[in-house]
Length: 207
Image 1 (cartoon, helix red, strand yellow):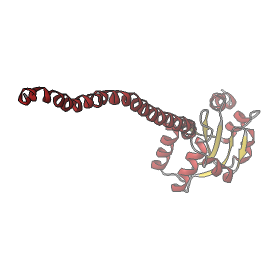
Image 2 (cartoon, one colour):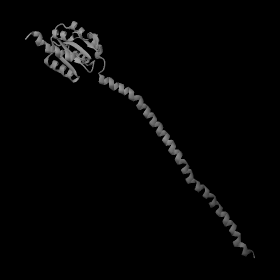
Image 3 (tube, rainbow, N blue to C red):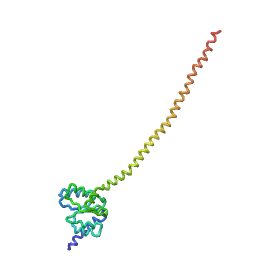
Image 4 (cartoon, rainbow, N blue to C red):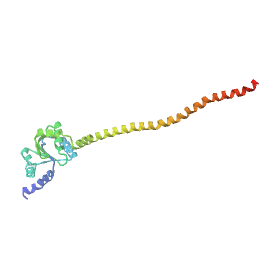
């Protein structure tokens, strides 16, 4: 079997991995310890990023005619690719941050959403928050005005409700006090009635 036929399945595998990819970052993984390599692969896997080492010639075949063809210019020495189809900034963010504690990991270049980036450009891309963080911040900014409006309306409702209750209770209190004020003159009239009856009792004494 010819060597080309043996390589074809691998080229097909690479082509399938990069199909529909939002970003690809090319790195030189030489110098990483087994523990560092294991940790890096775990972080990338948890972020939904595929990571694998391929021969440059095979990647050249797979990249040819695609938006990632420009990366072939950076394939010098052993190379590994980190591919993401969901979060465009994930490969750069994880690899750049990982390289801070593992200097042996060398970033070469990357293509993010069709744009070519060198190492400095990848560091800028890495500074962009994860998609989940951006969505969370967006939802927070959208909900904040709504929450403030709801709080204000609630306060208005509470204040208005208290005033209405006071207004409803006031007439009832005044009505309850009214009979006491009306009864007072009747009490004052009693002595006058007694005074009027007194002379009638003394009349026989005058005879």
